Image (cartoon, rainbow, N blue to C red; front, side, top):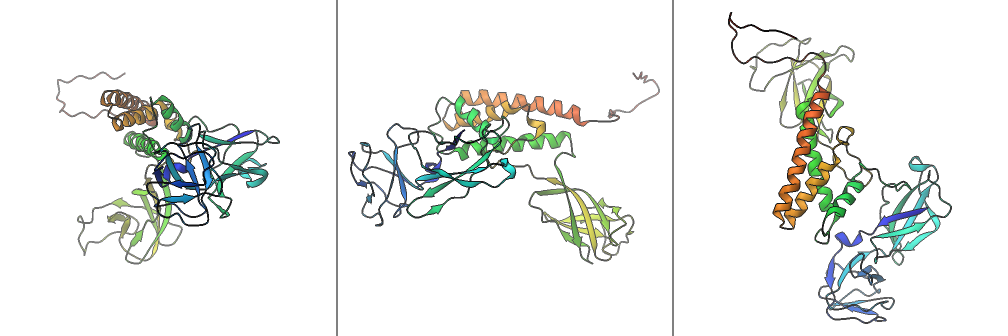
Length: 380
């Protein structure tokens, strides 16, 4: 069972360049800038996927005067201006759960291996693995005995077609060159930008799309605060002061009522103060507000995160939007305009198709002109 881990440590690592050419066997590096390099950290010489890229450990003495000492000699020759990254970790620890993603991943015997920077991935062959197993991985520094956080779950079947990782891969495969994109986070941001636009379009045609619920206590002054991290705006609110009788509240603007105005407990109103503070009218006693609220659009953070069900027939729009942004970034405006146009066309198709699915029951046509006695209508 082959388990791959993407080599990404270079993406956010401090980087400098060799000040001169270095021959194989050398035990130190002379670089243009040592800022960000530390004693006993792993350093990567060469870019990911380049044939002679390698990882070595810095010595116990702190890098100084443009020199990074190494604990072992270089395996290859490296020319002047070869990039050098302070990656910290030199190994990957592979961990396995025999109960799939419902289990706990533990480090495997023989599962700690050296990172292979001459490829885009480091792989481990779990010869006793099964398609029902799930895996995680972490990066490790074998001298400092420090370990990164675990990755998301890795499964033998790979990431789904609707996942962040798969869409990122599709985008990068379609680019003429991905070398100018220094971090996968750039591509992920483009994907999430389009997800936000798709989500807002879904909300436009279906106001009840993406709702959350929460019970919030309010005081005797009628004020309460919604602290949910994904809260955007209140859609519906019920109030109770006894825990059993709930009454639907109508929205009022804070400037639409007077200080001495009277309100009925069984026909309450609510108003907003700022982004997430609401007030109840009448203030009455303390109680609970049962709230249905609009969520903020979700974001895809982990490789295995998937786009919502309603968008899964429109993955091409995500790819086209990101390609358009990449070509703008690369000053290829004609290509960029073309792919953004493709994405916008898919968005319109999504809007029209989602709108029709979201409408149930009677549909009414609004008449904007007056009707007189001479108007005749036939209904079908």
